[in-house]
Image (cartoon, rainbow, N blue to C red; front, top):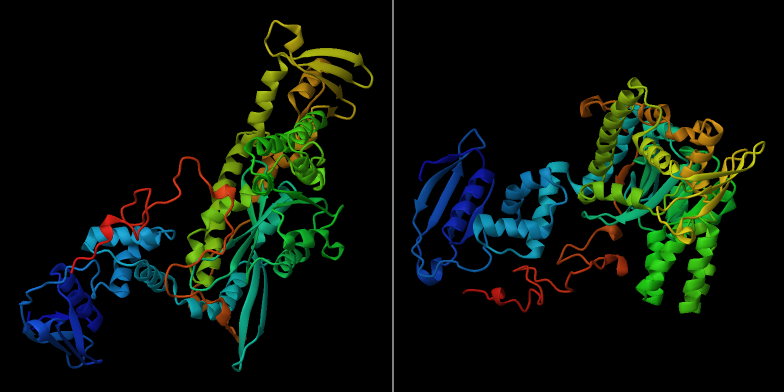
Length: 592
């Protein structure tokens, strides 16, 4: 071992750690400078172990060479603890760096399991979490410095992609030429242009950051003609509150889209409710319409009344397309629990019931669009702030490339509608073939359409719907709600030889679908080609720094949506068995 040369002091330290871990021995650092490293056995005093290593820098280089070595260990009691002193966060970070790069969402528990498999030691949650943070820093840069890099990146973004919108909000720092980060909003130009061809619906949601600094990532998500999510705008804020939600929605309204009649779907966060009702922000009716996520409403309802039968009835009422069905379910709720009916009646029906909302939400009942993209960005929420913003750029470009090609292929094949609506219309045509048509007024195009359930009894043969082809209206309500013809209107159109295509909204056309994804993202220049930034240095607020000790406490308010069927309430973090926790686990005994 004497004479062995390492490229750097760090490489030597890494090798010494691996050797000690594999030998189940520990050492202490006697001396460590830029030119010298001396290590000796941790138990040298009590067991007279002679193990010692001395290395010096090779003159004129950064390499280190071992010039003295006494070994092997003579310790009587080798280290057999659950953890190891040399298995520190730096070594673990080096081990998991490739895993983190491949999967940003790698959990701390997965890191602990990987260390057990590789080295045979059970490390603490704190050490694994610290190692993950170091690995992220090694891959994506320092969390603190990332705030200072952000405005420089945005300049480069706007240089390569003109038309992108960036709005930041800071306040003066204590030090000269520094400002403290509070919020930033960004929307890419292709998203702004492409959204003009999507249905006028926005789903908004907020989710927590996981990295070294706290905060909330806000997302506004559209929906294209193929019923696919369309990322529109993002913001990083200090949290979800009335001011931050109002600011986010104002940025969207003033800088991203001025579309009249836009429908916003969200939960009932007080900040969103206040912003949507503020006439000065441009989100009140008729400029925009606010609708409530059915899943969040059902969760609130369940938390209040704790009755699954009532909750299911509430969802049926929300999903009913006919007012008669809605009233039926509401009356049933009232018979079971009058207070539950009163609670629902206190919320305007157009906010949550399909039968009353006037076709503004296109049948989209939840905020799943924004929540799905939140899950796509789950790993990004652990990254430094500039890396997070950069990842949204690259992810959106990938979305646009794939779907632009899909749209171009359908245009080349002369497909008139998107796959989503094409399948719906074809299914409705099949249904229409079994309907019975009764003509009442040939000039006005008034019909009765009877559905055929395939039963012999006339009393259960199906339902009857009234059609007015002059107004393209059907009492089932589905044509108004979804924006394409129901099976009843299709049957009447066939009977009268009337073209049904005017009833299909243009958002569902292949051309609109292609136009949504046609705008191009352009590569950002290399760092040395970025325009200079001469503004203030941006730093994070000290109050937003996450506590470094122990498992982070969740600020999320859990409710019945978090309960999964068949899952026990307690699962041990060590053995992964149910019925007990880590503290009471039999495998939690330390071997001395």
